[in-house]
Amino acid sequence: MAGALTQEEIDALREAVAGGDIETEEVESQEDPQDQVKVVSYDFRKPMLVSGDQQQNLRIVHESMAKEFESDLLSTLKIAAEVKIVAIDQITYGEFILSLVNPSYLATLSTSPDVGECILEMNVSVLLSILDILLGGDGSAVRDTRELTTLETGVLRRLTKVLLGDLKAGWAGFADVGFEILSEEANPEYIQLVTPETPCMNMTFDVHIGETMGVFNLCYPLSLVQSLLTMSEAGVKPGQEGSAHSLKESGMLKALSDVPLNVHARVGTGRISAQRLGLLKLGDVLCLDRRCDEFLDMYIGDNRAYSVKAGQRRGKVAFLVVDGDENEQKSMDSDHAQNPLK
Image 1 (spheres, rainbow, N blue to C red):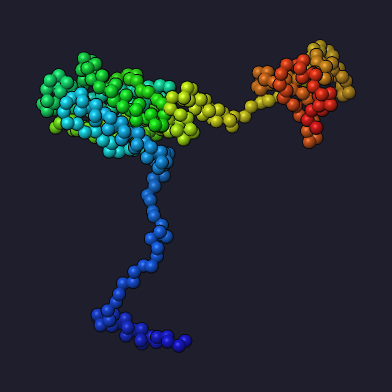
Image 2 (cartoon, rainbow, N blue to C red):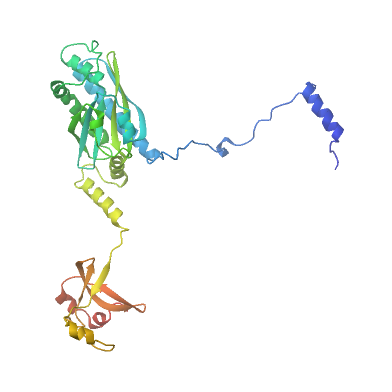
């Protein structure tokens, strides 16, 4: 082959490169960056059940809520305040409970219309600082993390309701849903919202009030998040009556769509003595309580569901489900009534 190097030339070239007699150049890759494959790590033990678009929608909702709550804190406390969302995590309910300290302030929130329940958790140190400011202090002297008293919880409940109003406003672009306090607890172990294995979406917020820093969390069961986001994706307008009810109803119908049912038509019934039953043989005729041209009863399980007409389709016995009462159907065209399925 013309131009091919001999083994001696190859060895000499290798020695020259190793000795530095020949300078080498790094060849830049000519591969188009757009053709390069981007590798993303994925944990199969914790699959992502929420799409990227849905996570973006969740961020939009809670960034809007954080801005409104920051404004409300400033107007209520008359002190510099900052609220911002710092994380959106998919975790199990058990992991969420284990991440909380005792004592905390935890409120179980119901939704209206009812699409499920969620949990609001706030650091006690932040709440005590807010309480100190509301009662005339500057909020800087609070350092303990004791459990809130009933009186303190009652004073702070007004601010909590303001936060829930901001949360409702944040969701307004996706679903017309309101939030109400169902119960309040200090020990996370006393809150049994769902099973520990249930996947949840946890929204974590940083709160800065004067010199006090803390966090609060909103934990949604995944089913609640999907119900609220599906309202927007399905074109359900905020404020539409029965939207949440129809959404839950359609979900139940979808879950039942693959359930097998026993369906049969009853030609008629009759009575026969045990003696005659013992004498029956091939070719005997039994008279039933229905005429052959009458409508038959179709049953789903043990419940009568429809009136049907017997016929034939593709060489097999078949039944036509009829509408209206029996008298109206008897006035149908005679040919169709005699053989409705041919």
